[in-house]
Every structure is written in structure tokens, then in C-alpha cells.
Amino acid sequence: MDGMDTTLEELYTQYPDTVKKNRKKHIVIKSEADVACPQIEANTRTIPGIISQRGCAYAGCKGVVVAPIKDMITITHGPVGCGYYSWGTRRNKARADSTTPKDKIYSQLCFTTDMQEPDIVFGGDKKLARMIDEIVAAFHPRGINICSTCPIGLIGDDIGAVAKAATERHGIQVLAYACEGYKGVSQSAGHHIANNTIMQNVIGKGNERKPGKHVINVLGEYNIGGDGWEQERILKDCGYTVNCVMTGDASYEDIKNLHLADLNLVQCHRSINYIAEMMETKYGTPWLKVNFVGVEATNESLRQMAKCFSDPELEKQTEEVIARETARIEPALEQFRKICRGKKAFAFVGGSRSHHYQHLLKDLGMEVVVAGYEFAHRDDYEGRQVIPTIKSDADSKNIPELHLKADEKLYREGNEYLNLSKEQFEALKKEVPLNYYEGMYPDMKNGDIMIDDCNHYELEELIKKLRPDLIFTGVRDKYIAEKMGIPAKQMHSYDYAGPYAGYNGAINFANDVAHTLTTPAWKMIVPPWERIEEPDTGKQEGANDA
Image (tube, rainbow, N blue to C red; front, side, top):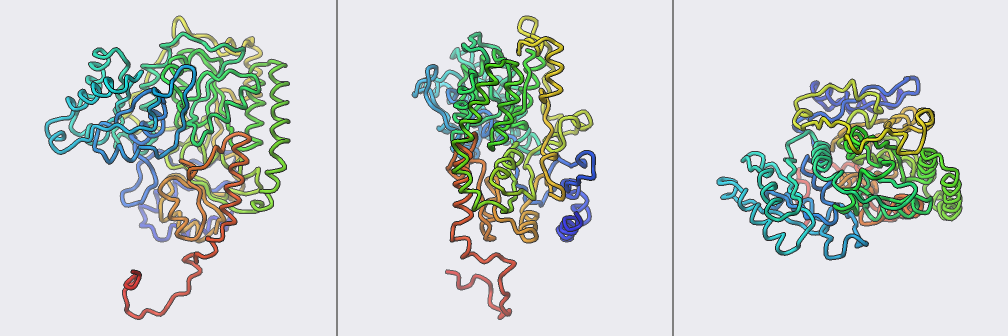
């Protein structure tokens, strides 16, 4: 603990007093002497001048939640640069199925109104309306999403009116998301806006429940590299019917029927907890936070799910799947453990992944000594019990809260969804954390660092002081680490690998991590702290680089 305290004090020394005071609130050290997690500052604006690794509200709405819906066309209403940024950067895989033919899958395409100077001066409403007409004529999509970028909010284009008129004109649902990049402190605001719009306009409109004894949704899974498909394979083997994996590989038709499942599984808490909570309020659907990243974590999630339904046959089948899959992959994992065991890692990844991947790394014998999120809220670190203590500020008030009520026709008590009595349901909640998430802190070790909105300088300093063997990063910070001679895995698109979820994903991940750690190239890079300073000859640095 003293060592980590010293490390952080040295890190703060370069900051002006006001910045130091602010950043100290974003960084905490795990102390087993503390009963609970120390309060961490999160979901607040980054100090100007700090090189944040965060994404904007538009990136959260379009890039994370909305764009993976495979049979809806998503239009970026704004300059072409914003549209390009979100095009194909996350590898949300989708495939044709019985309800979605190949020619109705649009998630790999990019559509933008390409706003130019005259559009900014005179408005882009008409251009947007024309584009919708052209898209309908050319592609005949089942639905259209319109995501607005910063200039649109500034000039005041009424995308809601355009969407409403297009819905009436074409007879398909056109949804408008006022997700201008400045709408919140990070991409988290975009998640919330997307959740609200989908909840208000799509969920509950269908009436076709899929056949099966136990029907479930997987929320907050984006099928990067095929993660969702691996989870579906396991869940079907256990005896579940997967109603919808949202939003990776999900169709508009699937999302309309989201309310017809018995249980919502929440994979990424930060991006989708809003829908889980709103469905609990409106329909009574219980939800369970799960983690299918890591062998032990997957096993634990499957066992908790089986307990929810109190079905002996389901529990038996679940244990058979766990035994079969674990026995199948353990020999291969053991080979990779010989390379990975004892290695030290950092994890700076958005969503819940900095937490999830700690379980998988633990399976490989590695330890995560520093972990953080780019756009989390306090409850992602400290657990949901702190939510009532989080004060609303001007930024959080930018996003309208939906005040939903129980649906008069469709609402059922949580115990009814699981075929349990009220007494059994209350007993279950003591055993399984239904409708709750304990955050990342309990899984950190004594002395580990938890850091919110880690910036460029802090990442460099922590690398110099703690010398990790491997870093798991987002899109922007990967190359900072690699230029310092530390291998990095980009976990927003998996560096074009994957899947990493479930049992097959564990093998893929272990294989990639082992190869990364043993790549000879890293031995050829001399990190800055080991370079021998040459005498200053007055010659400018880089003059002969060409």
C-alpha cells in the first residue's frame, strides 16, 4: 500500500494544484482494511488540457448501441468525418437467419448526410429527408436510425420532426437520437439516449414469444468477433432459448419482442443497465448481471442462471455443459498458463470489460494491478448501492429520464417470470444477485489501483513505475503503450481476433495473449526508461531521421 501511495504521489507531482486535486479523486487504491470501496470520481467532465481517451455521446449511441442492429440502417446526420469514425471500427458481426435474410443486413455499411458549409448555414433537414427517401427506395430497410452529431445540435435541425414525417411517409419506423457529441461527459450519455429511444419506441411492439421453457435475453452484448454466437451456443446447450442478443446480431424484429423473455442477462452494465431497469419497472422482468468472459466466470454465471429457474433438469444440464466444456479446454489452457503465469497486466477498457477480463486473466495465472474505465459511473466501480448517493449535475440533466409506469396489461411480478412463489423469489435474491451489480472493486486485490478516465500522461507514468508485461486498452491508448515497448491488446475490436467470450473464446484469448507475450519484436524496442542519454551536441532531435 505504501508503495502504491508513493507511486501515485510521484505521478501527481507534475500536475498544477487544481489538476492534482481533481485527479486524486479519480484514482483509488484497493485496501482490504476498508469495508467498502473509497468514493471514486466518475462520469464528470475531463479537465481541459488533459488528453482523455474517452469517446463522445455520438460514439456511444451510434457506435456502441444502435449501429449493431443488423436490419436497421443508421444514418449519421453530420459531417462525413463523424460518419467515417464510426464505420466498421468495432466488428459487430451479424449473420442471416430465419427472420433476417442476407440482403436485409446493413450493419457493415456507412450512411451519412455529409453536411457541408451551405447545409450548416441554411439547415440540413431537407437533405436528411431526401436521404431517407433514397435509402428506402434503394434498400427497403425495416427501420432507420438517425444519429445527430455536434453541428446538428448547434444549428438546431429538428431530426425528430424529420423522423416522424418519414415514418408516416414510408410506413417504417424511423427513430431520431439527439446524441450530439457534447451531450454528456463521455460516450456514456449516448448509451443512455439510445436506451431511452429504443425503450420508448421499439420494445413491447411485438407479440411473438419464441418457443421454449426458459426464454432469455442477453443485453449489453455486441458480438465483437463473434462473442454473442459463442454465448448462444453455450446457453442453448444448457437448455435456454435465446430470445435476443442485444444489440450485437440483433434485428429490429427481435428487439420488438424483448419483453417476452423470462429473464434479462446484463453483460455490459454501463451501456444497457437503463433498459434492464426500465423493463423491470414496466414489465417486471428480473435481470441478472452475468460475465461470460473467463472460464470460472462463465461457470458461475451459468450456475446462477440455473438457480433462478429452480429447474432440476436445467441445473443438471448446466453442470453437464460446464463439466464437458471445462474438461475440453483445460489441457490447452494449461499450455498457455506456462507462458502467462505470473505476468502483470493493466486494463483500461470501456464498459464492463476491465472487470470482466480480470476473471479470464486470473484463469491464466496473470494479475491485473491497474484497472480503469473510460466512461464509467461510480456504481461500475463501487456497486449499485451507491446510486442513491450520486448527485445529479448539469451534464446528467441533459439527458431526459423516462418515468415509466407498470404496463397495465403486460406487467407481472418478478417471481412469476421465473415460476417461483414470492417466498421462493425472496429466498433466491439472497442467494443470487438479481437486479444488482457489485462493481469492480471487490475483485481487485489489496494495493491494486483503480483509475477513472486515465489520461495519456498517467498511462505513461504508471507504465514506467509498475512495468506491466501487457496492457489491455481502448482504441486510442494502444499505441502509447506499444511505443514504450509494452505489448498492448486493443479490446474494442480485439485487434481483429476473437471471439473471446465463453469457453472457445478463452482458448482464443489465451492463444493471442501467449503469442503477444512471446513475440520477439518487443525485445527489440528499448523503453524510454532504459535508454542511455547521449550528450547534448546541440543537434536537433530527429534531424537525420529521414
